Length: 387
Image 1 (cartoon, rainbow, N blue to C red):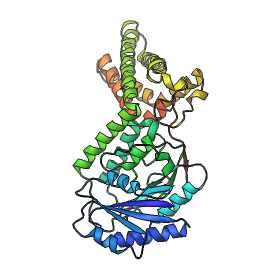
Image 2 (tube, rainbow, N blue to C red):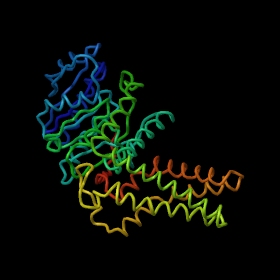
Image 3 (cartoon, rainbow, N blue to C red):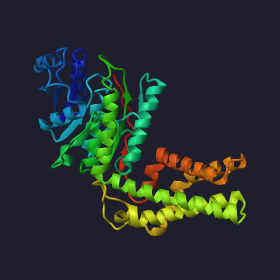
Image 4 (cartoon, rainbow, N blue to C red):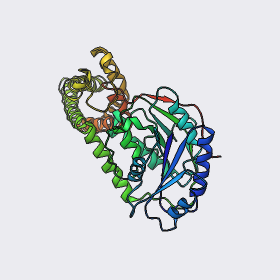
């Protein structure tokens, strides 16, 4: 059986349609199910209306005093669940209920313990989003993957609000989310082996208005910081940044000595300085930042790491490959600024910042994968959208 939790706040205009389509999708998937509406004191009678639909649909309603948040609504709903599969989705029809059938089929197949409906894989998408909203969503996703690279490094849509998970993976796990992104909490804490993603198109809102605002954005940042600390990735990040600062120092000093004192051509000195810094960073990360990983311990997360099967040379080559674009950007900025008349060390510092920013924004999961593989993900090819 699958237990689907649907948080609500002033969704009376759409809740009947949401329940009807969810029932139809799960019946088509031949899956026993229950629907649990968790209402945070709606002022439009959502809870009462949902309760009146119980003769038509297998729905229960949990009323909570005040607006306590979407993520905690999911957790409270799961506490009432009877199914061996647990799911969450929004009530406003932006999450097409038809996708529930795909999530069930993904979890009933062998292998996966978590199934995520993804907007950002092949076959997925969004309806009528402005460029600003697309940019904000992508930025939040990139930030999460960079702050929690081992937890989220292979997941295309860790911000998704529609997903399903085997209840057994949460046995004994204390879920304590902040804000509205419950999937982050699940991915960081659940004891699962593999995750499957199902593409879907994020649809137009059936009724009501967005609950996302400045408070929710702040809570999201707090949630990321809490999860980074709880999973050990914050401590690893601090060590990684210290190593990075030492590498920047080596880069600048080497470039100054080679080009400024020994007279090397800049096109030779800049790559040599950057490579020496990369080599230093690799071995310091080996011995300090990620030592427990290649020693066979898995400090971060509950998934097993593939790093134990790699030798030192293999890890080094993977590291060099992962860092090549950031290193190239560093060298290009350094040479270009120096040629334009900027002082050597100032230009080199700008190159270090440019390369570091590139790696943080776009490449941290690839770099950290050298020492620990993110969650295994197998991708579904079925496209889902509202019908």
